[in-house]
Image (cartoon, rainbow, N blue to C red; front, side, top):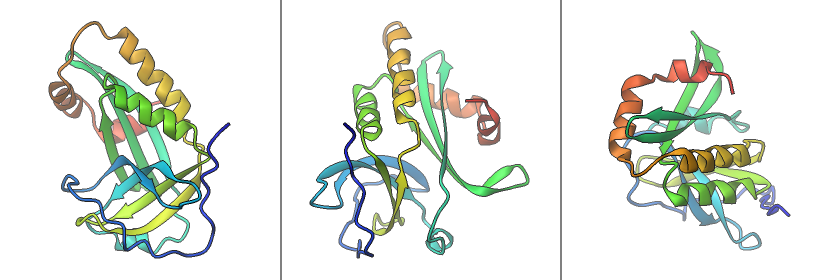
Length: 184
């Protein structure tokens, strides 16, 4: 049975939550956090934006996810592209790329945890790691399918990998607009 992790609708002050040691620049990262003591620890997405003012003006941020696994000579790369409409000149008004190693066992674990939750909580975080607000989405992001792809990549990959080289190769061979147009 999925974890019912819907947060009560009353407005909360999230200013007491700060994440340290985040990489510089915009991006999305998964973490575990207890946002509500009734729910306990859950998997959340940190949406890091050094200039979050435009996102803060949206009460109902329409968040979409495009995912896939890219094969490189050094190993597979899981990419998650979080994007926000509208589409302007062929690109979303905002997008954030998240790259993960599908061969790392923790990747499958976090995807399994996300798949088992009824809701996804996205914490908008500024460059200092300060949580500015939390967006709540009914979990329709197909994390179970993403996890199945990750598990398949792990089974199919023969031997060791070099994720830093795989990531560099992925970045050299792919661009966001090309990845966004791929069919699911």
